[in-house]
Image (cartoon, rainbow, N blue to C red; front, side, top):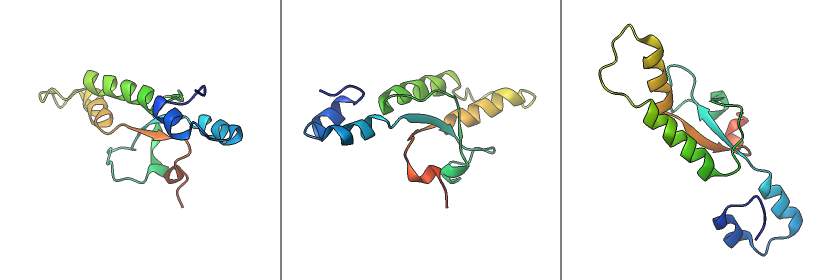
Length: 108
């Protein structure tokens, strides 16, 4: 099994040439958020990385995303004066894990 690859990748690409496996292992994952007003249909090239962390696997990124979404879940009763809390809830609801080599990050 090759280092830096998920179990599924190892099964799928087990017979891959070393140079191709190295290129695959260089793909990281970003935790991304759309710009305000947090419209998920905004092109990915306009989204921002939520953290500076590059996650090694999609699973690792997803675990962090799910924890943040659970922490900032909308309780349905945020007072209007709690602007920061409202923004955080809206932002966290639209987080996505995106591969660092996703062509949609480059835009047109």
